Every structure is written in structure tokens, then in C-alpha cells.
Length: 456
Image 1 (cartoon, rainbow, N blue to C red):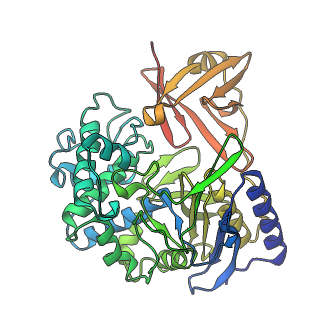
Image 2: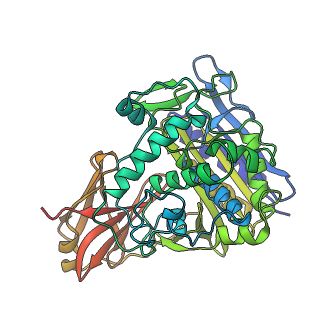
């Protein structure tokens, strides 16, 4: 049985408090379980409402943000198991208005962020409502009108793309809209009125996740406030629609610590009672490289911790920082939920998994160093752009060193191997890699996304 020693718990809790103080986190909930459902470690910190000092509990409702993508992938695998689709099918078979370039873009490419799209403008609920003059009376999670208008907006934008990173299946670049399309496939072909309803009937109810779902207008006392820090000032509200995607498969889920333990128990038990074991195996196969050491399956990242394999996903939206991790090698799964933006909860989850492996929670991956040659440095310098949030990244040389400026902060790049490097943050690492075509640098992998080099 997986064990976690008292000293590891002491270290982890000490680091949690440091992280909460550094990032002004209001509240946080964490748990580590095994496949029997035994809680190997669990605790809550801070407040679901910092103004009234209402504490975080295991029934506190948090946003999950992109952890939702694992739910969406699970639903697609359930539909495949039920004979409603195949991951090798072209997307246009289910969304006929989508231009999949003669069937080249398939469901499996959406599941792995490998359809070839450059980062796209974020199409939000509010943007769709504003552009169409709509006012919703029902919750956005179950609005047919919003689903239809949202699909129109997202698909129209993707159809306008006339330039791609590469053909489908070559590179993985994080694409929220791809998972939005997957949830639209689930809505149209899953046999229920909405993505949210399919999710409830096929996943949440069988797992007894009674406090989970995609609803945006939840205001009962158990729902956490959503806090964000701007210019050192923390503010909060319960507006789950802020920056929310128009299509819900990329980030709409909300859940509790108690419910998420049930979700992770399903993974540790290889899909039971939601999915068959063979379908679960297909979901967690490493499908495409992602960064220096990661791979991506269907809705899950795959990483080594020494000789153990860990499956995981994180999430970030205004007022949301979330992470799930599980490992069959360790017979352990961790969940970390926080009601404040920008908190490195994935580090906390990884620390728990390292402790479950009998290692120090503070152990970090080691990277080799290899300075780039002068020509590589020269080729790398320039501006790389993304349509998502109108972001850009600038690489500049300072002698034999390279600086990286993301518009908010400037970092020093640690070169690891030729054309690759990392940026070290207090509790995380950003992978950087140059992409070449015909010998010319045309793009930059920056974290989970690929940015296009500006040639103007």
C-alpha cells in the first residue's frame, strides 16, 4: 500500500502555506487517495469566502477550468465504446459545417491538441451574447441557443484559418477550441439535450458526484468565491462566466474535493464504473510529444517521476487553479483545488506524488545544460505571436545569453540542448523550443502553445 510519511506531510503543508502567502490564495483543498478509496492525506486551507471567513470544506464547490478536458475526453471515449463515433473519424462527419480539409482533421487530433491550429482568439460566453444581442434566462450550461451561437462563432473562426503549424498529428499546441468542438459533438450526437446533461448522466451520476456539473449560476453557500490578484490587490466574486469559453468542453466544470476523489478513484480502477478497461487504456496511451519530457493522451498529460508514470491535467481561469494527478505505478491519485488565479497547484500535486513514491516532496527534475551556438541564437531572436489574448513573446540575445519577454516579465532562458531550453519559475518550469521548416525557424513552442514567428 502507498505510504506517505509524517515528515513529507509536514514539508508539503509548510510549502502550501508559503505558496498561499506568496500568491495571496484565499482557499485551497487537497487530497491523496489510493485505489481502495483510502485517504492517504487530505486537508483544507483558508476560506471559500475570505470576507466572511467561511472555511474551505470537502463540499466546497471550486471551478476546475481545463481539468474539464479530461471529462470531455472521457465522454468521447464513452461514446466510442457505445458505438456512436470513432476517434479516427473526420470531424466533419459530426460537425458538417466544420472545414476539416477533406477529412484530414479527425476527432483524435482534437483530443490531442494536434489539429495544427495556431493559438486562436478565445471565444467567450459574454462575447457570443454581446455579438448576437442575446440575453439568457436559463443557465448557460444548458442553453441550446448559446450552444448553437457559440458553435457558429468557434467553427467560423477555425474555418477562416488559412495557415497552420503543420499537418494534423505532427505537433501538439494547446487548443481550447478543439475541446469546445468535442463538447459540441457530444451535445449533438450523445443523445442528451446538452453537453452538461450527457456528462451528468454518463459520468457524474454513476460516480455519485452529486455536487458537480457545468452550471454557471450557482450561488449557494457551498460555492467558493473566485479571487484574482491584480497589482497586488485581491478581489473576488462568484462570476463563473468571466473569460468562460462559449463551448463548455474546455473549462466549464465545477466540483468539490469529495466528488473529485470519486473521479480519481474511477481512473485508479481503470474506468469502472464509467468506462471499460480497454477504452481507458486507449485514453491514456501517450499519443504525441508535449514539451521536453511530457506526452499527451486524450485529455491528459503524461509525465515520468523517475521510473513511475503520472497522468495529470491542470486548470486556470479567473478565480480557479486546479490539478489532478494519478499513477498506476504508485497506486495513488492527488487533487488540488484553489479559488484563486495563478496559484501553482500542480507543484503541490507533484509534491504529493513524489512523497507517495517515497521521495522527498522537494525533489525537482534535473536538466542538462548545453549553450546554443551563435547561429542558433541569431535564428531564435525575434517576436513570436499568438491570437489568444493577443499575446507575444520576444527572444533577444545578450551576448551568448537569451532573454525571453512575454509582455509582463523578462526571463533568462536556460539552454538545455540545441534549440531547446527552460525558464525556471519558483514552483514551475516553462519549456521553450525552436521549430524549423526548411532550415528556418518559423515558430516557438512556449509552454503548452506554439507561437508563430513574426517575419514582418
